[in-house]
Amino acid sequence: MKKRIILVLVPIVLILLIVAVAFGGKLLERFSYSREHADLNEYFSLTEDSDSAIVLQDEILEDKAKFVHGTHYFTLSTVEKYFTDRFYVNPDEKVLLFTTDTDVIRVNIGESSNTMYVSDVPQEIGSTDPNYMAAFYDGDVLYIGAGYLEKFVNFEYYGFTEPEHIQVYTQWDEYTSARLTKKTAVRYQGGIKSPILQELPAGAQVIILEEMENWSKVKTESSIIGYVENKRLTDKTVSQRMCGTDFQEIVYNNVKKEGMVNLAFHQVFEEVDGNYLAKALSSTKAVNVVSPTWFRLLDNDGGISSLANASYVSKAHELGVDVWALVTDVDSTNLYGVTIDFDALLSSSDKRRVLINALMNEVDTYGLDGINIDFEKVKSSAGTHFVQFLRELSIETRKRGVVLSVDNYVPSEYTAHYNRKEQGIVADYIIIMGYDEHYVGGGVAGSNASIQFVEDGIVNTKEVVPAEKIINAIPFYTRIWETGPNGLTASTIAMSAEPSWIAQNGVTPGWSDEFCQNYAEYQSGDTLYQCWLEDADSIRVKLQVMQSQGIKGVASWKLGLEDSAVWDVIAEYVGQIE
Image 1: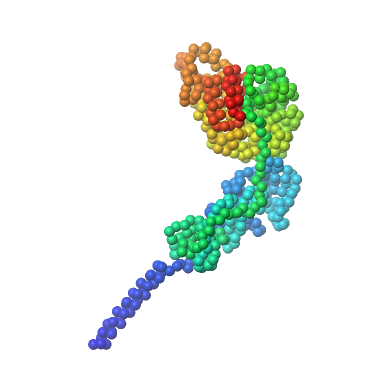
Image 2: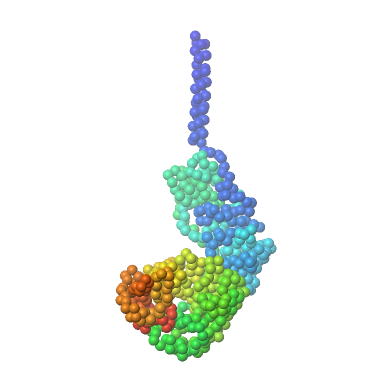
């Protein structure tokens, strides 16, 4: 009997032991820490041997760097996104340019050299590697050396291996660090089953990026970002990360005009003298800058035509008026039969130099106080070339102490390539052409410069340009719109001619609160005539907006079209603001 019981119990005990072992194994599997190690190449998404991951501050970027011949390189797109967008690249000339307030600094792309050229004077970059390249192409992708980039941008970087990655700091903020109480695995995610990224000894320091209930996101001293259990962290300390560079920010010493600017554009098509100017200014008030349309682009090689006149400048100075002579592309086709190709003209270093030298020769010859750039037909493909032209021109105007001003459209997505932000750095004044809201060919009748259009232009420009550099231009003209059997047409009318048009057609204008303009319309046969008037009333409201926005002053297009009453309004505006 006893033997029979034993025979029965043995299988039961064995079964229980097997169940216990299995259950214990499952418990052990469930609660034990995984020893699986993550593939760090996959973690950093590295696919090529020369790839280097980028950790910017406390974030792993999708962008990749290169580690070649012991040097880290960033792509141009990475540089523009995270460091600076102030490099200029010409792939045809194979040059990389950086322009300061005094010099154009050049390196030749793909050249193994320790030389950069500062305003064409060779200087050593500082590398001891005979194969060093400051920049090179890999296919169509341009790479710029981190060491070379340090000359123009304030940042620190530290390289790590196994696998190759680079830690970059462009900001130096407070951070919280902690010490590990025991040997600890840093895991890919918060959880004991998550793969191990790095094993750290007791006492190792980590930076706490995010603290959760049981786990914290941390960064190790080798810039591996993962998770550790909170119970492993002790001695939490808040510290200030210190900048270890001696970088000096580039300062652009702009040429400033004291007080408010009241600029009048003076359109001329032939050479005129000082007496002509005196007569044109005789009915104006408080004008302290005149911008004659003296220079026009003559070809795509940097040539200009000139209507400059010495007695004009002398008379202006006698009257206490500065001369900011204007150079434009607007009339080149009509006057000279040439279509200005800004890609061809401004992408060439030599042609930019020819144009700049021509303008500076006029400045030096006639004692001009400034140059006004009025390039209105720059296509998006030429945007970067246009901006580089302004950078290089600004060196020469700054050297001479003359003003560089640039005319700009009211900001829109179609004119973003004019890069007002960079203009606001290198130019002395940005002039908003606060008119042509509705224009011939636009297909819609409307105001030439409604108050919302004007205000939006100023507000949006102020997002990237300091207010003290902004001048808003107002129109001394408007348009008469005709809607009839032949569709929509328009004709331009001077402000001074509006009263005659009103009287001749027997209309009574009424004030529009929406547009802050007097509005008139009448029907003649099957044609509707409409006009949003520009007069002292509309100009007064525009100037009130400009005053509230705290900008530098006013410009007007153009001298001779105005009603004399408008000068009292402008003089009041100029006198109200210091």
